[in-house]
Length: 273
Ligand SMILES: NC(=O)c1ccc[n+]([C@@H]2O[C@H](COP(=O)([O-])OP(=O)(O)OC[C@H]3O[C@@H](n4cnc5c(N)ncnc54)[C@H](OP(=O)(O)O)[C@@H]3O)[C@@H](O)[C@H]2O)c1
Picture 1: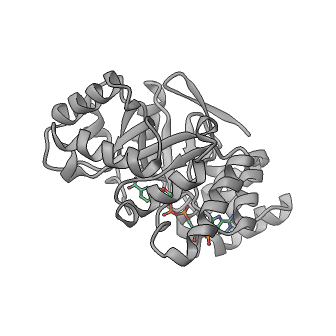
Picture 2: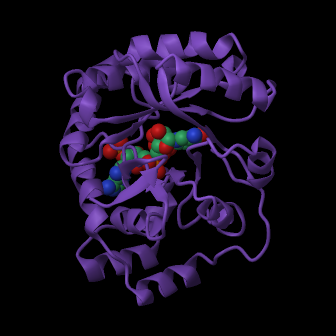
């Protein structure tokens, strides 16, 4: 596994997402097992949110990390409509209950909402003082949002990033690297849609004896300070995602991907899912 420095802590460049987990009770055991398998294989950063299955995903994570909390770097997110002075601590308390822990390693504002950023940040800082969270950060913030936030304590910005969605490379990613502040890439497999059937990914995968999904993960994490958080429930996918940390793309591979998915040449509005 390769690692990235996140506010003084080493975290793996590939972690695990949990969106759509916790929605169907008949799948819960498989979801818990997948997260545990991933943790064993070094995918120890686990990303969740109060939004996912309205707390259901946090419950899955809680069950998966029971007895192994110290092996995991736990990320959760607060809804924008809860991001007020009173709403943040209440939402955090509920998340802690569901996660079965007394501290979240990184607590993010899921996206910008109606409350002033200073109010949310103040609430985050109070949670740090109380030991309920270790760090805070944001998600779905474009460069102007980051500048307005203007707070070096922000530990990450979690945004959409994969070969088919390169908009952040124009301005946000270089700016984040300069801080330096790691970027957390969500949907690094583009939700296993068309991207994974693209012939260029297929050809590169074949050259390396890998899969298109592994090529996508290796590409997303190729530069400095990017953490990918693929979500996988299938045990085979979990295994492949952990192994993707060893895949290094050649200059020729990168050129082929640049050709198929050109880098942005001007500002693009931040894409979101
Ligand atoms: N901050 C935000 O606003 C935001 C937005 C979206 C997502 N996120 C976070 O980012 C995480 C990842 O995004 P995502 O879940 O939307 O999409 P994703 O990780 O790009 O794709 C997930 C899909 O890929 C499949 N998959 C996983 N590993 C694979 C592999 N090795 N080969 C082929 N298919 C594979 C999964 O199948 P199986 O599950 O069947 O294995 C699932 O269908 C989320 O789970 C969430 O934690 C955050």
